[in-house]
Length: 318
Ligand SMILES: [Zn+2]
Ligand SMILES: [Zn+2]
Image 1 (tube, rainbow, N blue to C red):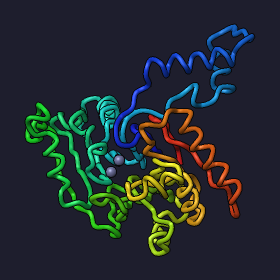
Image 2 (cartoon, rainbow, N blue to C red):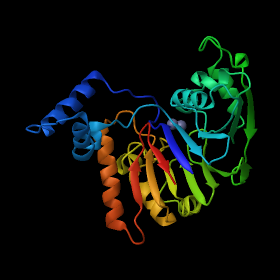
Image 3 (cartoon, rainbow, N blue to C red):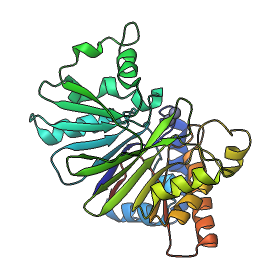
């Protein structure tokens, strides 16, 4: 199984500003002070080997959109955040005019999770099949509403692809083109649903926009079961623990620390921090990642849990 991250930011897309780029360049020049590079390759090696990730990259970017590939001929994608525009371009380029089927799995219909759909190229191509799966009754209504006048110039009915909405039931596993998919109800305003995907002996959990209360043992046990032995858990880590349990309690999101605890209990192999807070810059997100890794080391009892922070363009092979 392969996982590609097209959008990793929470709530609203965030672009690097000119000042951000200038600051990154200044930090890189300072770190390289006194060194000489004989070729672009040497400079590249220095940048990738010696500079912090927050100087050489950005955590992006677009709002939630994560692609899963299971080696079959249909596409799988979680959420249609603004990353769906780039994902759609990827589908069209890869297919080169051939029709294709895209299976979408929706966590919920908050704006940051549907805003990319009006810019999703395959929706405009005759012959393309788009199946939008989800557990909410209002799924189709939300997609139609955001493309209604006066908010968008192209009405949903004008889209050329064949678009179907498929209702899923939490806790019930369904087979979709070689992928076993199980949704789970999560605590979030208006409800959200996580998905556990299993194919070829690998498992990926997509669990965003989900608040966890540490004082509810039955909820914790249910999530530990949902994450059990997963090869990858994509986890809503919008806040720090202090924010999640104080000012931002009941805001419907979780933290890096809770992610580590749940994944350790579930013996998951890799925790991917996701849905980054839009107010956090790259250095802050790197700090959130560092804290999570430190906690994992300090509390490790069994095999190590790998901890990463998602960024647009990240690709993982499982
Ligand atoms: Zn969100
Ligand atoms: Zn939400």
